[in-house]
Length: 176
Image (tube, rainbow, N blue to C red; front, side, top):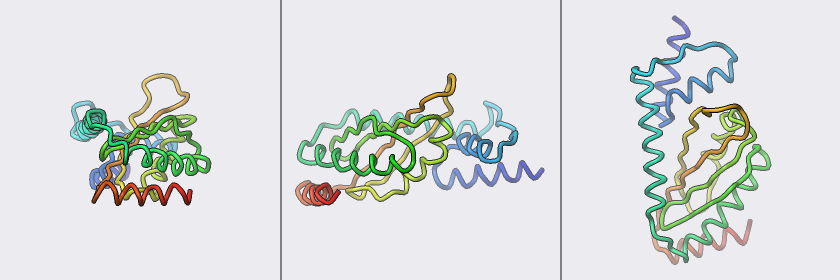
């Protein structure tokens, strides 16, 4: 019964914070090194995970469809790459790529393995990023053998005015 209450609490916390519940189950297993009953494919918690994955994929497609605003996207990509690379040296990931368009950026991060991503993805989501962008990611369990793990982080950036934000980003890049 205690495991069910703990699982329910973790799922509820994940729903409130926007994290898929099966990711939380996996994180709980990795941290406690115990067996936790996985929800059945028909359970509502599994559906929540699928919805988050579908939302994430839709956000990547939205990014891909945006035109490139060169006045904003190039300085923003440089700044994000610099910030993430610095963070990666302390948390164990490498920046494979950063692609910025008009208001969205996608950073492809490469981790040594899935458990490393689980242990440190929060550092990426809560780190100070240039341009006042919100961040989101999802870490579905790998389908194959363990090894390197890649995750896309989406940065949603509010832009007051392109010129003002470009100057702010350029100042940040200059101080990096």
